Image (cartoon, rainbow, N blue to C red):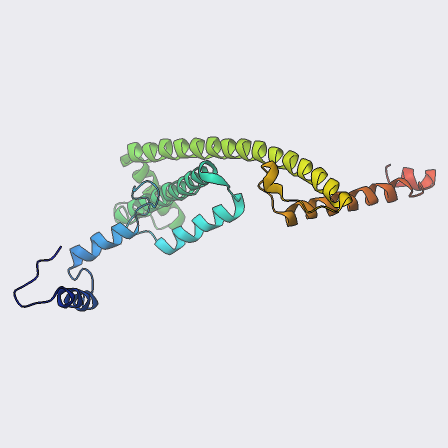
Length: 238
């Protein structure tokens, strides 16, 4: 708490603090601005710096949102797995970019050391020199990329297994809720799914009931459809 100066009311100090805050413009020096950018790039869940200063934070956030939209996670475990997928994909793409940048830099550095007038041969020889000089760096990038690829594959498999189990359980619970709601509808009694521990809304259960009705009608209509003549069935490969 800020001390109150002699002759000053507490409300005056609060007003002064608010006024000072209005004049705050954040870091002014280049070093301060750089630290501020790094803070903005820190991961929201782990505090780790996933996006480097030269990366585009807006593109990273857009890619994150695309992963969450595609995978549709529910609950903290699924959300964590999707975040790992997004971050791993981002880092995996960076490995490829680093390798390309390394080769481009090497070709530029060896531009004057390759004695040939043929452009393609010149590029190939300059690239070969780069590989020879930076073979350990290229190998490390390759191993890092393989590790990230395995992490992505394993995480994706784990996410799919968890989601498959969760959706199967949801489907079974929704089927039970639909049966109970239909019983209440036949009796003319309102039904609150919460009473039986269901997390579905009445609208979701009603949608399930109507979908089951339409599926039953579709099966009945399909069973009553006349079979095609043998010649047409053979022609169609039936």
